[in-house]
Image (cartoon, rainbow, N blue to C red; front, side):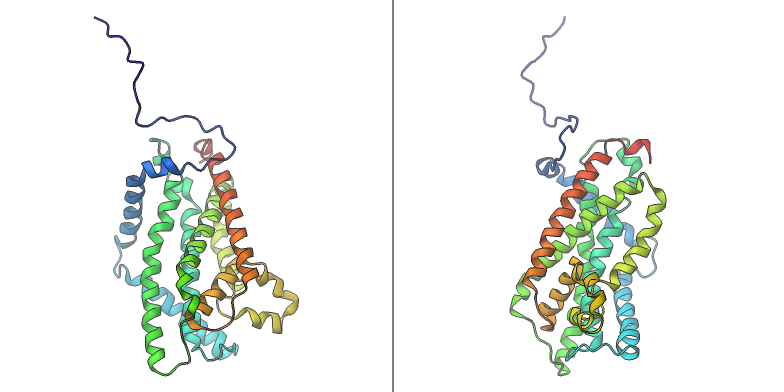
Length: 289
């Protein structure tokens, strides 16, 4: 006996082709929030597996980098950090910079690293790069605790450091840094699907970008000593985030409202362009990966 079709069936999920030029379906991402948390857990666990020191690597890298920069740039090159101890000055910039690079490099090979999953089951692809940005907050949190420990040490040693009243907005800077890394990483991941050799340039490019992002020197120093090259830093939104970070946490330097406004605009544009290119790539990436 044939049963009549139930025309009033209500589906829990409905998968349809993405025909819109631009789409950011946050409702669908929220529906798959359990999968997002699962990917975050995966990203965290894979860092600890088959390692001798585990999360201690999170501590070793910024400490040794700060020591190296202090010896080379402050002791040898003579870069002046004012009343702030050079090591703490470098550690503040490196801690924030590491979060950006972790988000950027982690999301820059999204399609290649997850081709096996993407080719077998449907879910919003943007969940994967989002999970990387969220999981890297743990790494940032650990490194920031190290910064706080050294901050307290230098404070009781009599160093002229203090929190600025605007430091309450520091989490907003981290959010902006994460969104910028996510947008740029999604854009690069789309390029990597077609141009494999582009992935080899990422590590080299990140190193070059660090030196024009005011990580180990104040922005005012570049303007004063090399005004002809100052535009490389002044047009870099990352430099304003790092400069503002030191102003909030160490009360050194200054905040450029115009520079921060420029940074927010660039971040939004990069994020939207990244989503646009990412959504277009996910439709056909399986043919090229």
